[in-house]
Image (cartoon, rainbow, N blue to C red; front, side, top):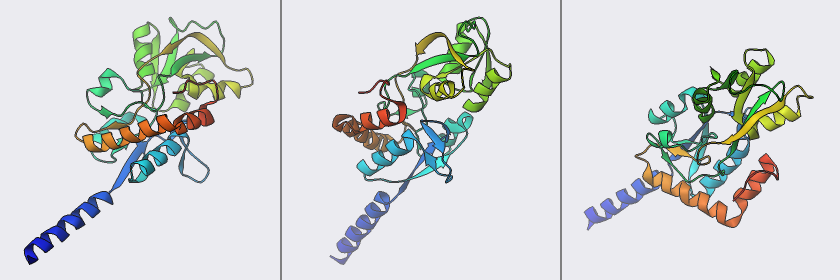
Length: 240
């Protein structure tokens, strides 16, 4: 009987430890309004609010970790964090190495921004962030691709003449264009790429993926996800 009681107590302690495990959310912290570092030095933005709410709904204790974009998948695979929540579009290629949740942003529009609206984005030099769906699209478009590690550098390349245009999520470029005082203009055609933005996990973490998936479904059903999308991206953005 004592053995049974001890065994039961051990199982309870083990379960308690598992439930108290801290889940680490990996993000870039450099892609507003999706994610950025605020003046207090903390992760902020749309994905900070969404991630915190999803952790609450899934009854998980979560902490935030920042990493450079070009190492975001390798750092997940090596265990530096447990989930990618960083404006990552769901694509077939990424799904070969990651387990994605359902999307928490509908398929977004990518756009070209240049110094002039008549810039040749198909035959010119176009900047994009390394390892993004946008860089892959430019590489296949016939334009000359120049890649940079951060989104800020892709915009700076247009300003300083290294590139004729930048190709990125339109949601990222809108505030830059609006605050440029007429320096920038939209060029070329807008493009939809990928299946929306989702959380990426290791393929072995199916239970954790399912918890976040259920939490995303809850936020879609009660309208709270749409509220956050409109708060951070404006009322003209696609919602659920």
